[in-house]
Length: 342
Image 1 (cartoon, one colour):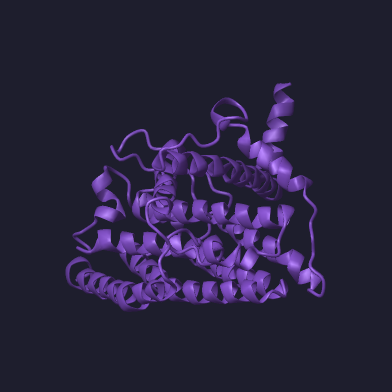
Image 2 (tube, rainbow, N blue to C red):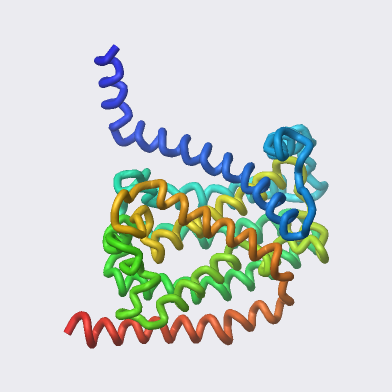
């Protein structure tokens, strides 16, 4: 028996099998989070609005996500007449796959990552650009003018907010000197004042840099007050209007997968990843606590602030976030040159 277990461990340690195990585990992790973050969102919205939320299906409504999943899977997948059927079906998968691939390079623990590559940060931002194409493709393939209008607004929004997010990423690359996410976390070892969020001796505006990244993350994941992709109060269901059943369900799951990715990346870049704030007992539990705190803040913001008007949204990026992110980039480079690499 012991020999069989040893042989199994050796088999899983080989690269193809290890990646397969991580892929299956990541898909299960994302699916479970997508299901129960909906429950968290509904319960959170209810608390903020002084009502009970889901209560009927299971204790405190805990089985409500399972009931919702069964309902979505039982609905007919309707493909509108006259659309490109292939593109219409591919768009939801194209929305989900970049998040799954990007999560593969996230270091959940010191030795817990599907793939530790030197350009992990570059890989995440490369795949992130596919989301815009997926939403645009979903709206265009629907052959619905309102879906196309909503998709076009999302492209404008994402292009605007990708710029300050990339400037923040460049700033963090200069500060850390690497694009390897594992090395970025290791540089933040020790107590919480070693986290990049608090490294004001390199850049006094580092907390502002984190705030810019967080705001851009909300916009890139199409969360309120930046939810221009769906905007159900004015465009029915926005770019997803023509999708039904699990076609809409995959778009919905992709939104939560991207929230997980954004919060995980913010945890790595600014909050020390798996490092303990006290410098001892570091591990994956600290990573998850930090990540889910950010996820809860995303839910909190959605049910606190109303959706902004579209032109105000673009002005926030072009007139405020981009100039400030450029300032933090220039300030960081100047301080590194003058005081840390003389």
